Amino acid sequence: MAVEELQSIIKRCQILEEQDFKEEDFGLFQLAGQRCLDEGHIDQLFEIIQNEKNKVIVKNMGWNLVGPVVRCLLWNDKEDDKRKYYFLMLDLLVELCNPKELLLGLLELIEEPSGKQISPVILLLLRPLQTVIQKLRHNRAYSVGLALSTLWSQLSVLPVPYTQGQMQADEYGLCQCCEALVEFTKPFVEEVTGDKENSVENEKLKDELLKFCFKSLKCPLLTAQFLEPPEQADTDPLRRFAAEIIGFLSAIGYPFPKVIFNHGRKKKTWDYLEFEEEEDKQLSDSMASLAYLVFVQGISIDQLPMVLSPSYLLQFNMGHIEVLLQRTEESVLSKGLDLLENSLLRTEDSSLLHQCLEIKSFLTVPQGLVKVMTLCPIETLRKKSLALLQLYINKLDSQGKYTLFREHLTNGLQAHSWSPFSIWYSFSQRALRQTSCKTQTG
Image (cartoon, rainbow, N blue to C red; front, side, top):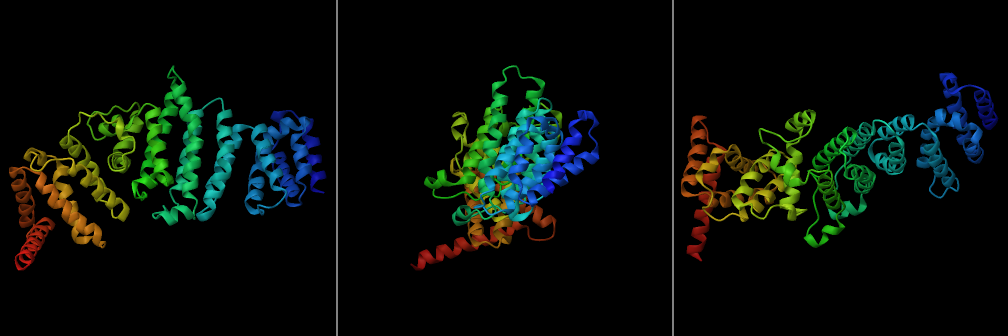
């Protein structure tokens, strides 16, 4: 009955011009096609769609069947013999249907699921989505940006795995999706790098890719916990994802030294004012994440000029460390402490001139360390904060040490209360006395 109904609708539409199709025809075609799937007439439906006589009808109306076919693939048992026909039909619809309508339909399907259903839908639809966008002749950059934004929005709600066991289990599919997303994005990166004329459309595509890279640096990479020891790095899917994102930045003309050393300057070098404004408001976390990936994880660190001094790199990283220490997540705080430790260990004792304390972050970072030391519930982070604060003070020259204590102690007295820094000073002095007593009695 469903097949005959569909054939009747098609026969009526075959005598119409394309512009004469009515909204009612679209609805009837979708309902009849859905019933064919529900009743198991997949082979007859496939033949109807494949029929050359129905090419114009399928081009305009067939995109309505993508949703029902996708739901059949998601709901049916993986051992079902009909699955191969569902995949063939999906590929055929992608090939024959209007790419603009298909794009919107696929993105709606990606937006629908929640929780553990997000990753199966994304993994199923990334390849058809890539094919559809590549078929578009106009507004490719806008379509790529819309697709990447939709995909990122869905992935950003998935829990980030922290342990090796969680990564291997990949319960919510985030790791698989990140790897698949890299493959989805590569052709568009190659399109940018292959255009030697730098057309307006190419510049727009580059801008969309740049925004996607920055979003990825913030989520999931800002909160991702990378595997240790370093020899396990190749088996860490999120670290591989980070390396690919940094590689994309370089490929589209924004190697990380250019990106990271430009951030925070009064005069920006971004090509688009729209992106410059967005950067000021939202991308501090992304830049801090990038700094951690480069300086602590060592991803693409060979791109850095060898002439940069340790004190310059410390000065550069302090702003990013400040951003990381303002967060409350354990993984992000840990990144801030690791980045500070990495930067301080490169610097000689008493080599930081007191003038560096005129830079805001050189005063706020020690405040952040004290807050972690006094308020953080995780003992390992508290102890590391104390050790790093002592190490930081050791790197200052004598005038710098005096200035640092004066600033924090004065601020505490003006507030008629003990400042966190003075609490640290009292605490550390007591710890030093206890250590000294243990040495003498030993």
